[in-house]
Length: 322
Image 1 (cartoon, rainbow, N blue to C red):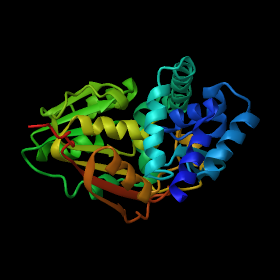
Image 2 (tube, rainbow, N blue to C red):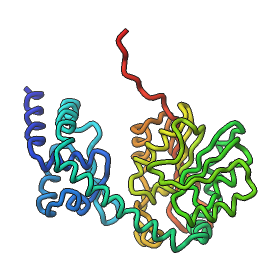
Image 3 (cartoon, rainbow, N blue to C red):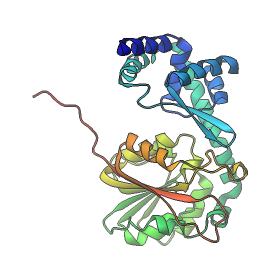
Image 4 (cartoon, rainbow, N blue to C red):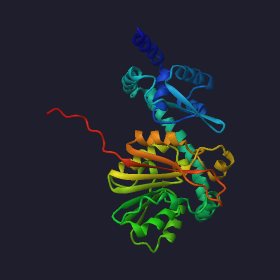
């Protein structure tokens, strides 16, 4: 009797086209009400009303960040039966014209998130290293790298900035592939790394890395994710270019409330919750995940930092009939 009632509740929620569109958009993205209004091209009153229904029935979750509220699909919610039903409905609705239009508008919303960071880096250029050290201190990268050094590794410095991490690890690994999307950052990195023959600089966005599948033994994302529009996609892309058993290490800000700092430095996110970061890493293909807060440096004026590390797991393979 209980199962029957739950199924009918799920059918009631998923019978509305607007709610299906919301769930499709929120399946892989965290968005505000304002974002969703733009993506669905609907007024706030309509968007909020349908979000309330999805919240009340356990389909979406809401997270506070400063003065903003972010909504996302609960990964296994509201239960196994509901998830199976959503898999069916979501796949069936994927080719609807309204869903395609939502995806186009979503790409525009995500692109707008990058604007502040891109403008900041264009203004800052080579001065970025000085600004970063004044805010976070100059030893956080060393603390995060203690477990990474092996002379046989190929290491990917993803979001390399001015090349600090590459400079530190290059003498201890076989090869470093350093990637950044900013010409100003790559120019400064080229100067800083000019004497290191095993470092290769590549220009590219982190969501589409200019690296072949399964190349890296180690990948690092140091003070990068709070600048990107879609951190989950970046972590999934990092998994793609890593060997099975390779290690990913992330250093970033703990979740904080300093919106002034975020505005000055072009941050998209106010840091990250460590438990949420751990869950995301598991979801995009990592196991043996560990997250730890880093000891604060006395010279640092910014938010606390954490390190998150995980091992690239072997992709699950569908059982083949024999």
